[in-house]
Image 1 (cartoon, rainbow, N blue to C red):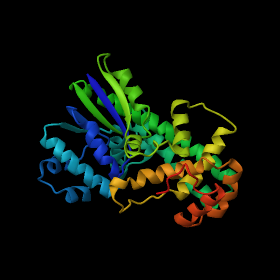
Image 2 (cartoon, rainbow, N blue to C red):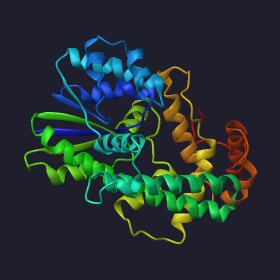
Image 3 (cartoon, rainbow, N blue to C red):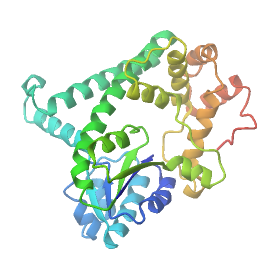
Image 4 (spheres, one colour):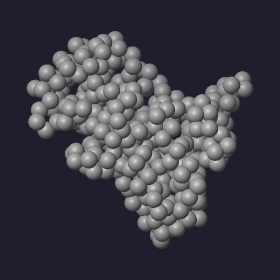
Length: 324
């Protein structure tokens, strides 16, 4: 019996590779909380755009393409499940507050309590990071990045643990299952192995790298910010006086030059993945001192101009980089 964990990104060009990865699995487990309109959308009783209008989607082109893929899987008889307990619990907390309750009303022995604490800590650290990168010194911003990465890693540890607990009894019903997961959820396969019987073989595939290498590009490496989060995810007590500030500094520059919006470019050209790979390789050429000089220079610039400044500081794109 096999379980495939597909680590991925919410980008349109990933969808064909997701379709190949899920082929031959009896069940697919999606990284999203249950939604009442999901079944109607799958059956065609609810239009895809009408369904998406009822949910919070950051990447509409990706979500639209995924809905079409899921409809095809549903028609072919694949079992589809929405399983993301952390987000489901978080929604229940928001509803609890909307009903007039306060944080102090959350029972300390409830499942909502650790979720609330993890989300509160990560959100507070993120806001502090935004403030530091907007008006703080370089050193203050680096410290804010490190604090946020630790809080984010703690949130991901809880999220992956809760999801594995919810997935294990469902996965046991099928001979083959595909589990969708964001690429930062690298602990999820390990959490699943701990909870599934020995007869289940859990393997991990990294879809962004598959897409790039399948198109003749080098594979996609984790960005500096994601590498920092992953360090804390697997090694909560990790400390290094050189590696931590360097990753944090590069993460700030990377976040500034990365294209955020969905690109209208042909998905077959992998615009988002190539941009992600390009920006990661570019900032990996920067020293801590180079980041320190760039930080005040680019933090208020538009993305395109900031990227040009970083390219100049890195000595140009270079022959090893395929500019998008």
